[in-house]
Amino acid sequence: MSPRERVTRSGKARPPRYRLLQWPALLWLTLVWLALWRSFTVPNALLGLVVAVAVCLVFPLPPLRMSIRPHPIALAWLLIRFVWDVVVSSIEVALVVLRPRGLRNALVQVDLATPSDFVLTMVGEMTTLIPGSVVVEARRSTHTLFFHVINVKSIDDVERFRQTVLAQEQRVLRAFGKPPIRNPTEPEVAS
Image 1: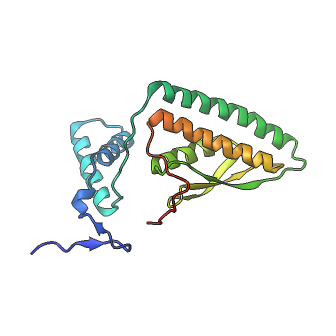
Image 2: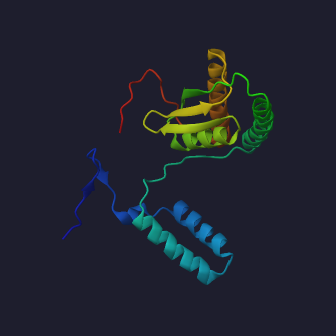
Image 3: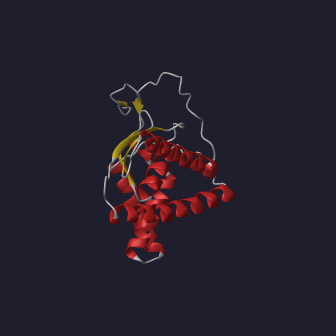
């Protein structure tokens, strides 16, 4: 008797659970297990691997399709620029807090140029870690991020913030290799 093939709501075939065991996730979960127990022994590593397999089987994730290749110089520039942005934004936010007159906030929508979930996550996290903005929604289907931004006085400030996020996306792309860029004129199909 063959196992029954399962399908998703959209009609696509869902892989059996044993195919959901992906070595990067298993390795990461095992390393987290070892770090949590602070015991780097072979028996503990084997137990961590068993726990990782159980977690992946009980809580299956979609297959990881990451074709990233770190570029050291671009990655160094990404980190340097990130630290610079954190320092400058911290000073700006401190000044806004000390002088809160006329403080206006805004929700800003930023449509990313790349369809990569990895880039969407990296850009959202890095931008949120810079003081003054936070991601309030991320739409995977359209690769759109929505930010709450403080101290926005005009449309020019909104556009300046949007360009800052898009520049961050380009730095992430240069640091981790370029995934295919989505053509903005193509109609999008929600999956």
